[in-house]
Structure formats: C-alpha cells, structure tokens
Image (cartoon, rainbow, N blue to C red):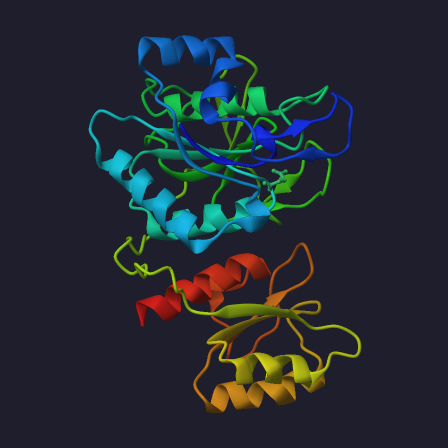
Length: 317
Ligand code: SIN
C-alpha cells in the first residue's frame, strides 16, 4: 500500500468540523485503524510505504514520476500480487488517468481515497481502504461467476463500494460521499459487504506508453486548460501562446463548440504547430462535434484527462 496523502489521511479539529487538514496521517496509521488490515500488516502480507504526503490539489509531476516508478517496480516484483494507492479526491481523476496510460500493469493497481477526514464522524476512508484491498485480492481469487475470468489488472479506483476504470473516473460531487462516476460509463464492479465483487464490465486494458518517456527533470510539456464561456477573450489564449505554452485544452461548450473569439486566437496555435484539443465543460456526453481537429480516442475525456493525454503525446513526439 502506497500512501500519497489526501483527505483519507486528513485530520479535523473535531469529528463534525467541516474544515480539516488533508495529508496528516501516515499510511501505516491508516492501516492500523482497520483491524483486518492491521492483522495483514503484522503478518507481513501487507507492506506500507509513504510515497508522498500532499493535499492532492498540490499534486506535481515529481510525485507522479516517483509514484509510477515505484508502482511499476512492485508490479514487476513476483512477490507482490497487487498494489493499493491512497490519494486525495481532488486530482484523483488525473493521477488515475496518468497511471493508466504509463503503467504496464498486469496486476491490479487499486487507487482509493475518502471524502471525509480520518477523524470525521462518518469517515469513509477505512471502508474504502478495506474494499480496495478486497479488489486487489480478487486477482488471486479462484474464478467464479462473481470474479472476473481474466485476473483483474490495470488501474482502477475504488470509492463507495464501486470500482471505476482509472481512465474514465471523475469527481462529480464536491462533498457527497458518493462523489465519483465515469460520465456515461458504468462502474466496472461493486464490492459487496463481505468483499466479493459483482462484476458489471470487463477490466481495463491499456496500451501503456511505459515510463521511459517521462522527463527525468520533471519539466513536462506545458499544457494549460482554457474554458470557453460567454465573453471569452482571445487575450487569454494569446497570453499563453506568448508565454510559451506548448499545448492547450479548450473546455468547450456543449458538444465541443468554442467561442468565436477563441477560434480566431487558435489559428496562431495551429500555424505554429502547437496542438490544441477540444474537451467539453459539460459533465456527460463528451464531444459530439464533428471537426477535423478531434481525435476520436479522446471524445469522452474530461478537460483534466485530456490535458494529461496531450502532455504524454507531446513527450512521445
Ligand atoms: C485532496 O484531494 O487531497 C483533498 C480533498 C480530498 O481528498 O477529498
């Protein structure tokens, strides 16, 4: 189990306080709070490491590279059957998408988080942690109608008893315990109370890019997100261009349309060979627009996921 911080490791002033500080408790302490997991840790079948300790709003490329490198080492270790990563919910969709795209994961990589701090009255972290371990364990379970025929592998996210594909998951509520969905896609599975899985869909497979393309100096391609809205001003796109941004994701309206002022500003980007991609600011449905600049492989991505994909494509150039 690899810890990176987040609300799951958060501490509040009281059990009911709305405010709290994320990333305060170590992953060892999280495990110690769940008796079954503590037992596994004492027997040596569950090992904990703290890879980072951040509020995930401050996630950065150095942590991403460290995390992906460590996970890949563990995936490649024959003594390890699965990896669980604790994370904050705020940028979970970006980290999950990134890991899905770079890891050659033929074992389960299960991310989990919490919407309530560890000290909260209805802390959801302990249950999510337990469920995440149950999903990682399913890899070793005998095949039955309730377990996948192919061993569960690849990057998934477990929240509120639902298993989401790492490439699809997104945060869709700012405070509710059931805060994640996958746009129009359904969950891959549900985790029952006793830890068995009810499968809904097959497990994710990724044509992973591998880790070699990640810059060692953590100077990743500069890609920003710009939202198209009433009164959008071309100066925003121009300012990013002049400052040297290497790519742009436009969170468009509806099915991917853009304000005419932005469309005009983007001609400069196109002429200079600097890529810009459309996404939509709408929660469901993805890009419906037919336009030569749209690549069908990223029609369903959120703006944040599209940004990760564009950065990786720029690295792979
Ligand atoms: C964070 O993303 O680290 C803080 C918020 C959360 O985990 O819900």
